[in-house]
Length: 307
Image 1: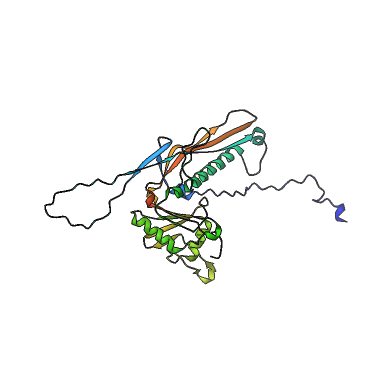
Image 2: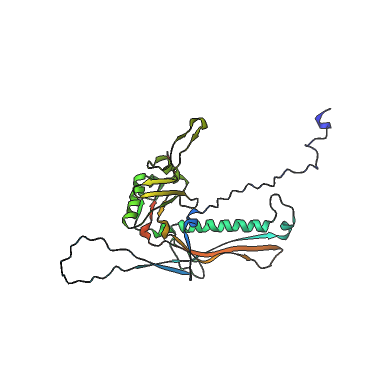
C-alpha cells in the first residue's frame, strides 16, 4: 500500500497541536547594585544629606604652656538627589483571560510579575548610570543622578570617546583607584562591571582569590573566573551587573550606598475604559551615595579585542 493511501499525519486535520506548557522565560532580572544598597526612607521629592571628613593628620609639636589659637573647623558638605518615578503597565483583554493558554494560568498575574521585575531592573540601571540630576517640570519627569555621575574625585579615563581612543582595563588602574578611595578614607569592597570587563578581570588580573585553571584532570574541569580580588587594600568582590554601562566600572564603599524610597513599589488598578483589565506598578526613589570620595569609576574602556 502506498503511503498516500494510508491515514497519515500529513493529511489528517484533527491531530492536536503539541504546545508545551513550559515557557522559556529569559528574565535577566538580577539587580545586584540595587540589592546591595541599604534602603532608607525619603520624605520629599528632593532627598538631601550631609557628608563630613576629618582634617589632615599633623605632626606639628605644641609649645608647652602655649596659648591656643582656634581655627575654623572643616564644614560639612550638603548633597541632594531628586526622586525618580518609574512605572510599568499592562492591559489584558477579558477574552484573553477566558481562553485556555499554554503554560499560563492567569495572564494578568503574569504581566504583574513581569512588570515588577522590569521596574527593579529600571532602577538598577538608573542608579548605575551617568545621568545628571534634574528637578523636572510639568513637561518632564524628575531624574535621579546615578553614581557614575556623582563620582568626581576618584576616576580613571581613556583618552576620548571613540573606540580607538578607549583603553583596556588594567589591574594597575584598578589598584590606583583603590588607593585613591583608601587615601580619602573609604573602604572599597565591591567592583561592579559589565560582562566584557568581568572577562578582562578574570583573564588578566593576577591577585586572585580561589582561582585555578585545572581542577582534577579526570573531571576535565577548568575554571577561569574571579569573584573576589585580593589586593593591597583588602578583598574586593567582583560583581557583573547587566545594567552597568559596558565601557565603565564602578568601585564602591558599600556601607555608604543607599536607596532612599519615597514610594515603594505598589500595584495599581486602571480605570474600566474598555473590555480589558488594566494595571501598573509604580515607585519613586533615589540614590544616596553618601560621600563620593568613598567610590571610584573608570570610563572609556575597550569592549572588544583579544583578552
